[in-house]
Image 1 (cartoon, rainbow, N blue to C red):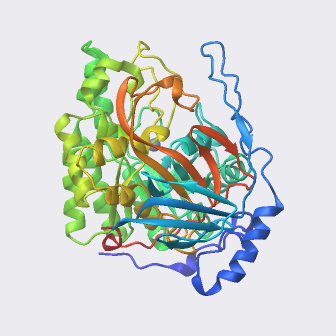
Image 2: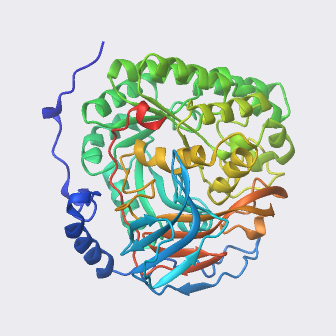
Image 3: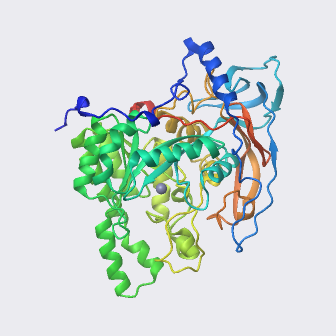
Length: 526
Ligand SMILES: [Zn+2]
């Protein structure tokens, strides 16, 4: 049974968060001249004075000395020619020169003789569409501005933040605040997901949010003890509301009441906290919640996006639904592709993340699904919190810093390890994220007319990941001492070089809020 949409019941959107003319300036090759003139106005009216406000130095408390960061002031060039690189899309790679004019891709040609204000050699590099990280939390040690800086260093040019509306907060108020923060302090473009901690009182605002360009909304099926869990009544209602207004349901799928009981019992029995943590959040309870959300989304007629899939059993639940024709998108994260619960036992609270790290077999199943189309996207779940390895495990918060290492780890563990093609890497880190959230082809591709969000990626660079070389305010990296091959060496956002050889350059244009809309079918993503 599917409930029919009842669009005329929806309240009219609140104007304050409606997309501006600049926001709805979707790529349209027949209207390029008109769009370009508008683009120019939008770019030049309000240079971002605060764009990298905290990038040069931050006071982080006595526990850590930050590396000194320098930040050059950007000199805006209106044309840039990237020569001799291998330009990669989700389906092919070819040697070509890319000409950027006024922030957009103007031509892609072999041996281009075009004149440009600046020529950048991409010899022996991949020329990738900028990474799109669809899973970020800019409210912990990295705020919106700081997160965008560490993102740019990691080759990410667009982020989609979770705007978490806590109990007592309004959804639209929360979205407005995140949008304003992003427009004033981010250096990468951004969109938003709603995050509802109290759907009973917040889900009624979802139609306004969707109309205002925030199409995807997440609830937790876990974290009952923390008071964040959405029960089945409110989950069904939220998915129903989303279905009726063209939105996308997102869930953190774990059975929160079952895991809470198991945790209580394990603590009473005095089990080692790390082992208890792994044992009390088993994969089967992730798969159960995944199935439950899928069933309710089917009844509601709502597309569903499963965030941070971690396990073989979770993948099976998703594959069954997709096989039956249901629109269920699936994401995993670099930590689940790279680490296992053995790493959690060694690193303690630093690797306390939810869902927990799984087994080596689960990790291998995720890589296989990522290669074969059983997973659509990789998002970082970047959430750096204050914690140390020896902290009380159950008292420590969930989350870890991930955004800057995401593309390198997907390259290293995927492409350099022969698990993914470079084209598939582009598909899951840029093209599919853009398609799922309606940003394509403005974002997620190197095509004439698209925003010139480009990463020059050196596939031969061999180095060791250390906390000291990361740009997050996190107190650690989950990958300390890990050898890695390949990294971004230049990050360009709408034609402006943000990072070049590790050096941050302050952009002259501000970040843009990107309205999302849901449209991609599963066939569009393969
Ligand atoms: Zn998250």
